[in-house]
Length: 352
Ligand SMILES: *Cc1c(COP(=O)(O)O)cnc(C)c1O
Image (cartoon, rainbow, N blue to C red; front, top):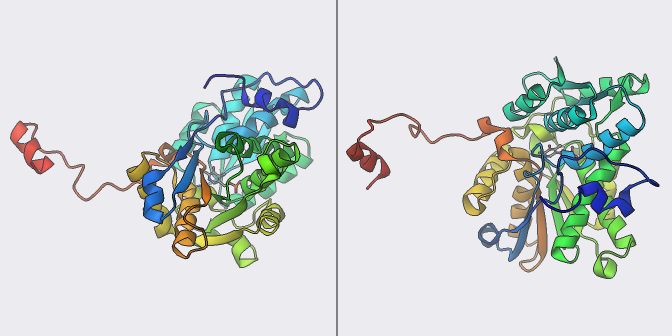
């Protein structure tokens, strides 16, 4: 990526007076891809993918983490801490490194995708695995923050959501206007809250023509859908580990985004998530992680029900890179079994 770092690009909307942002890993500036083939499948002419995989650690979390860690440094923090389903820990670990800050991450044992774990380990974060889910880990982290042990860099840190607003700014800049609808997965509900605030902020600043705002379309996995069910889910379960959350911290923000924008928050099944994840990469070449496909699966359903019109401008946020969770991709039966290395065998295997 060229040009100024993300926080400098939108300094007028983000920074406090004279604030310095010494740390950047080249976050933001991610592509908005016109998904023509996928759109044709859904009957949508103007479907776009905001692909957050190209961020430094492979997810949108970097947009907020860069601001949270710069401010932690500015405030003389001694360490950072987070609870994580995986991507927050990968991002916190990376940004803590140039900051010279110890990074502690609390993770639900056995439920973090392999790539994310590797990232946090590689960057030297201290990993603490707990027998409990994300919600339990976040409850502990809140207490540690209150005790002043370390700066909490979960999305309960307001700097995280402020930084994440930049994704909405970029969507408007790239389209030249706000879309009619913006769809995304909802886990802890920080991102839907941040996008909605971001679209508002940009419109209020006179940077969105006509002050247009999109409908916000949030999707939860069926086994982890507290907002849809209107009550916390004790034991959330889904293949989309990034949204395996039963008691979202930004619950109220998500509901406000839905209601103020005339949008929806609904569920999609794990089968839909995996099927649509595959469609996105096979039709568009964009490989996202399972959670990211939840928003697209939801758009497919709404389009099929006529709740999104064929000419509407729709943006689906692909929140994280597919390489984060290689175990979510299944090889076809026998396709990885070796055959003899001669030309005839290879021709035969190719079906020629
Ligand atoms: C964090 C995350 C989400 C969920 O975002 P929230 O802000 O927690 O709702 C979705 N997808 C990916 C890839 C994530 O890392």
